[in-house]
Image 1 (tube, one colour):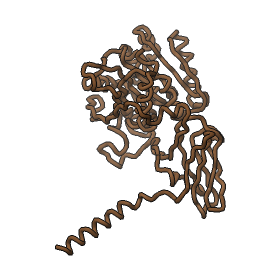
Image 2: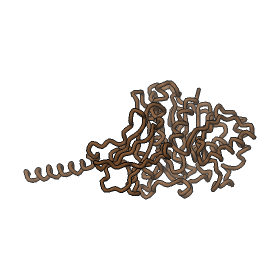
Image 3: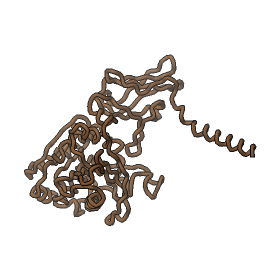
Image 4: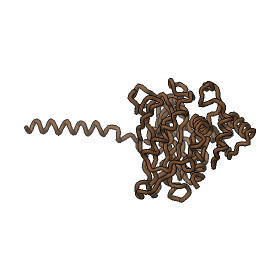
Length: 391
């Protein structure tokens, strides 16, 4: 018995050692990234045998590329210029091989691309971080889709006070992701829960439910979360069979609204529903609103994917858009908000769409920002759009 106990203890100790092997991932006293007082950021990586090391990020300065310099301790270093407040992603490239920052444990996945991440505070990024305010909850919820023939998953944010007042009902923002995204995209890359917690705490936004469905109608859920398990790897939506702009998702959208109204304390009318989306989600927003004109009083198109190339325009969801917009206008709405970056590859398509709306005398608000097709813009668009809702 003593020998057995000793063997069990040794086995347990061995397992503990094995389980601890990934804890000491930091390389000594190296700090990277280091956000400096002047809002510049310093990156460091120890690579004594490397010939060339650079950092590639999503900031504007230097097109997001910084060549790192080697010091006497075999540490490569680069410091950016002062950066505007935002959440930034980056990768370290060593002799042509891109990877994560080995001293930074915080990462984000965008489609199949995993990057290290940091914040520069003092502005919009303050809303993307956790503060000592009341917190809402995010749940992953499965719902049955008869039209798409499968159970499907979505993420749902409920505000801090949800459930505290049994008789209180809430408005709903339906927030849609872009190509390659999924029901996790707005939660992880968009920081929706933190944004809503902070806006609500400051009294800038009404307490609301935020529903973030999966916009790929050929898939149940995010990669790794479906019955395909790890055989379904992240990919742009146009590469997923049965998923890209074929009208199925738009026409099945009432199933999502109906499920939410049945299972959450909502105010089930168009005055208390908003619909918005980025890129492909902006395209979805336009055609869901056009096909269901009595459902939403607030609509937001963020860098909307309005290029109709490779879209099956023969599908009923996409036919007679002008006529459907006239019906939407007749039904009435409170806000039709369009935003695009002036360097976005979809800029021309969005500007052409504005001319189309002008010809129809269709009312809208337009916001033009700097830069291109990136999460920095979409997070900031949400910061501007959410406070306009349900007033």
